[in-house]
Image (cartoon, rainbow, N blue to C red):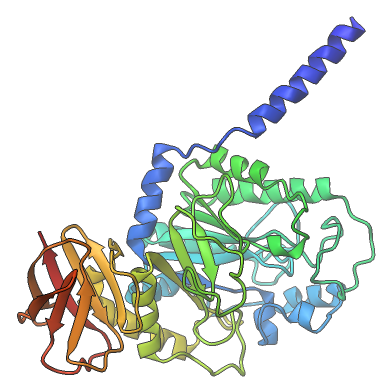
Length: 433
């Protein structure tokens, strides 16, 4: 009897291991959501937490080595009297964005939703006492904006986040934790996020880089747990690596796919999943009262065009003030992007990166038999385009529909623009045979 039991147990372990190693097969709903995600092209990233009260970015606890017990007292004074989910979502729609990704819990460990896994959250630990994520989710569903949740894999406060990673070592944690406890905590919070707030477009992970490369986060178990609750929910992990089994999208931090100006993407191979680039409007993710280095309206419009031309979405960040409002300059910049998209949205939404690779002069996007040539920086009245054997039927300016002359050239065509392009973005629409 004992031998039979031992044999059964061994076989069970082997079977479980085999099941765990099975390839991830996304559901039809998941594949549909991937397509929809690629069509949306533009989202708003929101970094908001009790760190906004210190107005020096979301990493201040780590950067200033603030003791976790003292940092936690910030919650006692967090009362965002001007938070208005209706205005937030309305401002996002005015920007032309199709989805929101908000920090449900950042590295400081404070949860911005009414979790039952810990009382260190906006409902139980602040005098505000409201679940802002619930209010935002309800408004997003009402106004037709997809909602994604940023979720930190690391935690500078909890003792059971152990072993300690490369960050948060100076915040006063001395206890030896229990990873099994922390893993259970994360699964519990993810369950809440996926059951209490309606349909969620994606879970956006961050922090895997905090531990050594060989550390076992048990991510596949986490991914499978998410897909078991909402099979259509996309999983995106900001690990700066090639896509892993169980993921549904690939993000690039402060870089376009294939670039590494930020230094975060040196090992990131571009996979076959939907792509996204996340970027700050100034130099900060969380609210920073001294950071006035906002990108110009032109630069932001160029960024969304370049992202689309690189077959990626743009996730552009805003860090709300501690009172719950977006900085005025951020709203102004978003509005400028929205006004441009009102005119040129057809050349961005629902497109994929064009077959002509991005160049210094600009990028192309494609939808059906139309190729949109986005001219961003051209110091000439003519532009050569390699056509890879494709035939151009017509060429015209997208804005005023005026015909654009073109001549055949070796393996392509030359657009005869007649003038130096001088708009923020000059778009030529080509119809292909």
